[in-house]
Image 1 (spheres, helix red, strand yellow):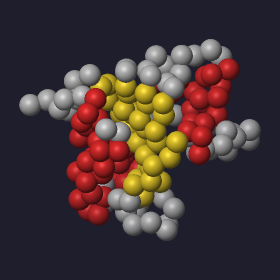
Image 2: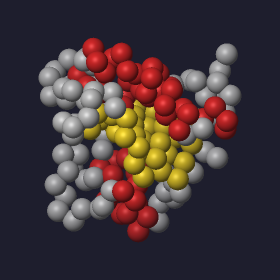
Image 3: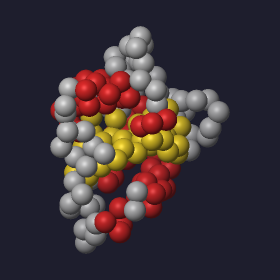
Length: 157
């Protein structure tokens, strides 16, 4: 199964970069899995995800209800495509996927979305807040376990 792990974020907005930081931790761990980080969104992600069977998305979320570092797992079906294009990313992921399918793009058949609760996603800085920075290894382990990456791939030595 051709798998892509895609970490989203803005590398200069503290905790907003958590998807990128987690992708950096996972990069090279599993030789048969592609790991990429991006600050792109909307329709531009179609070029990145087409041709993969499985897609694992990692991004930040600020609900204000969870603790920084709390991990939420979603499926693409949990997100509803929007018709008003009001996402801060220009076009939300669910709408981009629906459009990709309608246009005949070879879209992944399995999609997992991980959202990490953040504390500060608006302050300029290249480091995550200490609370999030301390959680990265734990989050990486949770994703590996949840996606059963250990069973489908062997970590590099």
